[in-house]
Image (cartoon, rainbow, N blue to C red; front, side, top):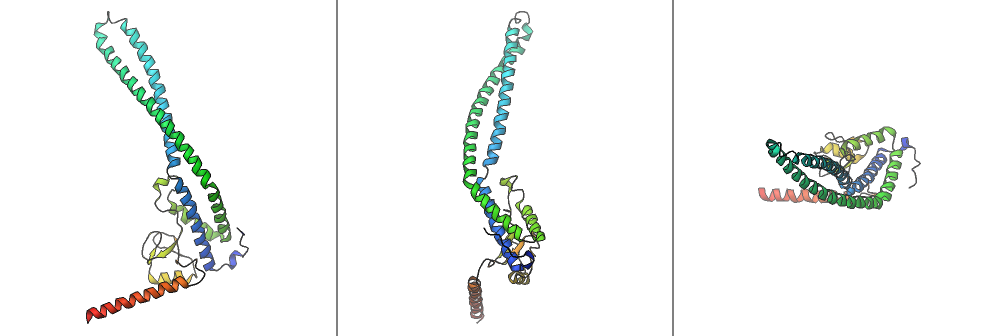
Length: 257
């Protein structure tokens, strides 16, 4: 991708808005790639923790089993002289049997979790390899677009995006806002928080003369025609709105008549 050589100070607000919107689209694609990996990294981490815990438990059970077995062997020789201790050591034998059962179950779980961990690691490795090149390409395009923005605007975009992502890099499963810093106005509402945008504010957004943010969520707002090279779709939508308004008026007049 060729680096834009236009002086940043010469860029119009419309150009800046286009760059911001393009930047958002690219970063959203990057987020989709990372979300595609989904829970796999977390499942791998959880499985590694479970395997480590099971190994520790098994080692502890083995040690306790050895100690209890040795203790039982010694106490059996004293049964004749210590009849009053028989009940105590019988209970201890029961505990050993229970620990043997627990040990057996733990080993079975370890085998199962180790196999699952191996599968998940292979799946994660394949998924990362599959998406790495595309992610790298998107990141380069994102950095180039950021470099074309003036420093304050780029910093503001990154701050809004970071806040909107709501910890996506830490826990994908808790993500609720998708990392959107630039959103379009759809159906008279913010595409990020879905709060209504006043008509005059929508006119200012469509004029593309200044950077406008949502007063509710702080995201940068652009009109949905920002990437169009002509006004074809916008004119179609306006005509459709006019026709809808005419039909509504005719129905109202007919009803009143």
